[in-house]
Image (cartoon, rainbow, N blue to C red; front, side, top):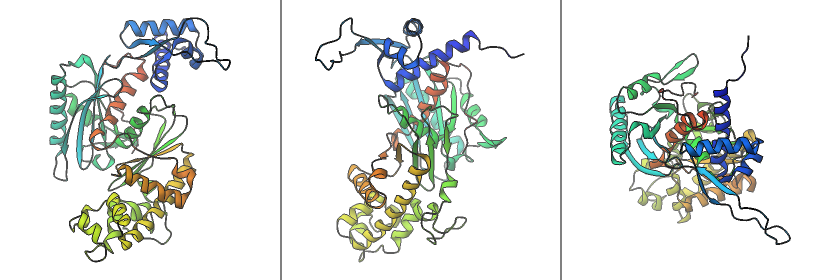
Length: 421
């Protein structure tokens, strides 16, 4: 016999809707919240008053009057705005990538309070990575005078290339983070641990940082490195509402009969646009004589070449460099145009491209030239970069142990073992 929804479940669902709406829309009045969620004002008042009493929400003042077309001010009392209490709890996050481990502490509004990082290479062991995360967590909690009960948890994002090193394996077709979760949870002072795929979590963090700019459609997140990872985030932003396309994307052909790479089709994304592929393309003309500006900027080391430096060298008169950059940007334009069309993307977010504002302007100029204004206007830079990658883990904790629980934290340590690669 099927049972109906319990009162506790209904309470959590209503609280969850209220909290997520406030987070996405920013400070809002009870009246507007009632209209947005189609819940009675009496129910909204009861829910928000309870959340205020628990310290989760705050009344932050009166909303400004909206002047009517006849220039008359509306009658009646001003609306009182409510918002999530930034200091209700605190959140820890970490990201494990191939070059760096980042750990940080932030408020409920994802305002950074502390951060730390450790370089990582092929010789950095799993034990060293775990110990750094534990020691950094302990130091940050101590510096901020925080106890376990003051922290919602710590979220750990693992980049796909680090999955095997961290002993994360597939179980029944999905990634199982239980060994990593247990290794971190065995430390007595560690708050609740949540683990997931860093590619998707970085996309989630970008969406969370778009507060007050309601996210209405799919967003495509592109991470550039030794591999090119793609994540597609839907408006609901829950763990069922994402897709990741990493190695599948790398096998897509963007230049028929293009460059070769073992294990990938000729002219594939991997063969044309990975960091190693772009460096290999510039290496064919790279020399003190043919690309003097780029050669001087990188001290003669081809491994130091970045897309940003190629733009600068092209702008400074390196003709051979300009030819390579033009070809690379034609390929990027094909890939980005396809992503926009396939996923009907509102935005395409670039992560780890290492572009300054000037470099990003060059990038968009090429995209506009080869793919058109519609695609170029959808390209944005990631809000989560390098030393702030840990915000990806913070977003995981906020989603799993706050918004999805209606502000009723789950004391049990858990993980997102159902996150696909």
